[in-house]
Image (cartoon, rainbow, N blue to C red; front, side):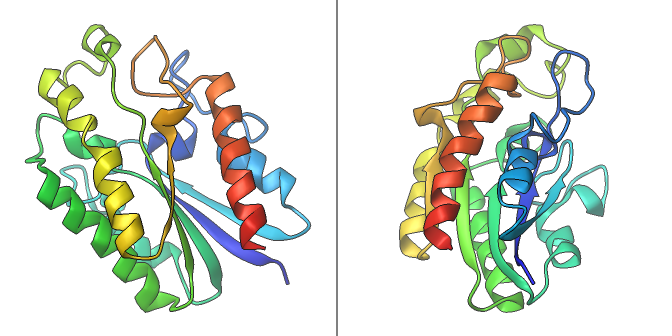
Length: 204
């Protein structure tokens, strides 16, 4: 039986397409590319959801990472990849660095309680750009959201070191779409796939 890895997070795991508000196909989104590349060695399980946050979400339990993660994870999983946290910077939520740190640590704890030897890879979301203020997401995000998004990579890097998790800062090589300043285009999904692929090859 192949090893199982869960890709868990928000719309940038789901594969949201900023051009048409649809979903990129498996042969475009980074998690789908992983599924195809590792099909003979690893079962990649995709659980991305548009607008998912770490904490309680006003739109329901399925959009709260902490609440819904145990539904998708069990002891059979060898690893988990997190890409989540950018939606917690929305205007409606009370974001601060301490709260975000607590939330990611909680996701790690949930994962290890379910599968004690699980390998964990944390991906830092790419910072939101000013383009979002002229997009259809301007009602959700503001200038403060942009500032807050710039704190995430430092927080996640610290957490990864302290909790023996692998870490990739997507800001070091990827950029968000100029269409909305939030989601990825085809080229950046490919870049993310290649970086994550390298990390998973070290795991196996």
